[in-house]
Amino acid sequence: MPAQDRGELRIIGFLCNWCSYAGADTAGVGRLGQPTDLRIIRLPCTGRMDPLFVLKALINGADGVLVSGCHPNDCHYSEGNFYARRRLEVLKRFLPVLGFDARRFEYTWVSASEAKRWQSVVSDFTEQVHNLGAGPDLARASS
Amino acid sequence: MDPIQELRASAREALPELDIFIGWEQGFDPLHATPAFIKDSQDMEGLIWNPLCVQNLAGYLPWLKDKKVGICVKGCDSRSVVQLLQEGLLKRENLTIFGLNCSGVLDLKKIQAQVPDAGNIQEVRFNGEQVEIFTLRETYRLQKQELLPLKCQACMYPNPVLADHTFGQEAQPANPDQGQYFDLEEFEGKSLQERLEYWQYHLERCIRCYACRNACPLCVCRDQCIAQTRNPHWLSEENNIQQNLMYQMIHAQHLAGRCTGCGECERVCPMDIPVLALKRKLSQIVQELFDYEAGLDQNAVPPLLTFQTEEKNMEPRGE
Image (cartoon, rainbow over all chains, first blue to last red; front, side, top):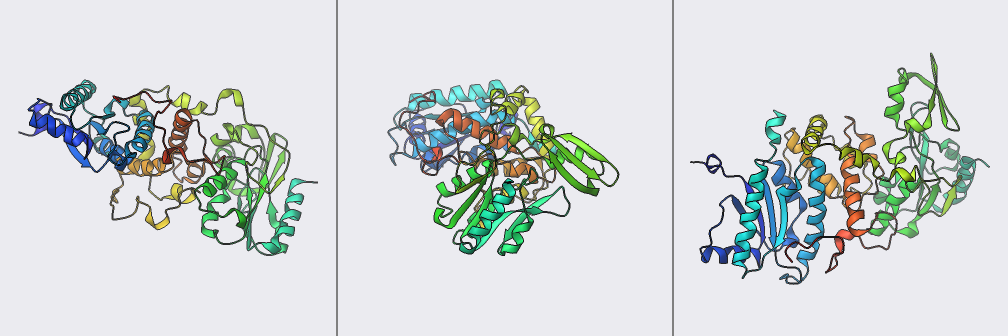
């Protein structure tokens, strides 16, 4: 049975290799229950985040996008997440001008040991996206 | 002396030291100006300066980085030059900048909307705030104020911010009390759904001719533009709203914190798609967050290439 038919939405997660990806892993190892709407893409660092990744996901039908990395001052590469923070904040404020609800996109920080925090970040964001419902379908509009 | 006479005299004087001088001359009819590339002192007679000189000539400069170039710039164009200098794409010592104080250029699309036989123009005269257009059949007297493009209605820098020689009377910023981003305030009165429909309506027309990118003085990736490369393959050749919107996102995002709002993208669009708004929104955000405007200080560090460990205008997000 396809996931969409079970009422799932498509949420894309971009996680940094060193903190949030490991944090998600810790949550899994600890068997903390999480919604299954999130598809995770692992990045070397949130400094790798190009705002176009988020835009491409949303334009092509993702219902939500979550970016998570190391806490500021804890970046494995010292400063990657500081650059990311600026770009992602610009992007978050930009989305509404296109007609995308800014709540479909969040960025946050979760460390490798914060399994509990990861669980609540995913659960809260998934709930937030579910409250908004399915994202705009540009493909259907153009046909 | 008339500014154009001064400009010609000054350009003639500088010409022996230059490889090329770039200004404007009359195009195929009196309503159209076209870029002029002058190497010969005689050709300076054809040089013009009036509200029809719409093109931002700064876009030619990165291609001529190692040549000695004399260039005419309006206030807005000078910001493109500053931005290019900041990014190390030009050499200041190779440039002689002829700055023109500008009280606004005309939007030819607005003229064509008011002049039905715009194909038959015999003469255009500027009479203070009035523009007189003589066609074969009729004479039109239009108010200049009503023919200004958005960038001139919201212009904060009518006088060049960087120039070696300046000509003409100093101009005043347009309507400072209506706010620099009055158009966005109006746009943001729409609901999210209406905005989405607005972009769907406009981007359905996009033919991806890339004119907006090619005319942009700051789109300097040339053959490496990711809108066209196969590797990475960001866009397909399909022409649909998703691909067209994604293409505009590539253009706009690559200009975040760099765009000086010269409006060339929107001016050259053959399908009249209001793409400048996307860049203006990004400029507004950058100004709010980082208190920064592109193209004013060639020694400034661009805001997206730096950071503060404590960002003063951002809410903490689970730090």
